Image (cartoon, rainbow, N blue to C red; front, top):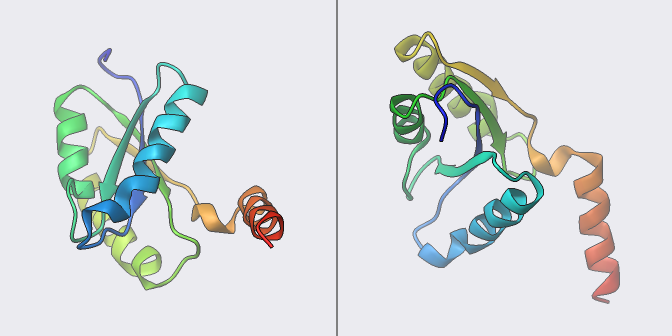
Length: 124
C-alpha cells in the first residue's frame, strides 16, 4: 500500500457468533473486485475485532491519511447517531492529520432498498 492513499472502512455492529461477519467479509471481497487497488477493511462497533479505533490506528501507522467510513447498518439508530460520532471525534483528536468522512448507513441508500426489495420479491 502506498503511503497517503485513502482507505474504505466497512463499519458493522459485530456479534458473538463469528459466522455473523461472513456476509460483511464477502461484501469486502466483492467491493475489492469492483474497486481494484482500493484498500478496503472491516471494523466493528463491538464484540468483534478490529474495532474502528484499532483499525484507524493500524491504517494511520501504515500511512493512510484519508478514511471513508461506510456504516453497513440498515438504518441510523443510536449506534450511528451517538456511538459512531463519538468514536470519529476521538479519532480526529488522536490523529489530526487523518481526514475521516462518514457515509450515511448503507441501508438508507435507495439502490440498496431496491436491491433488497428485488431479492425478497424473487424469493417468494
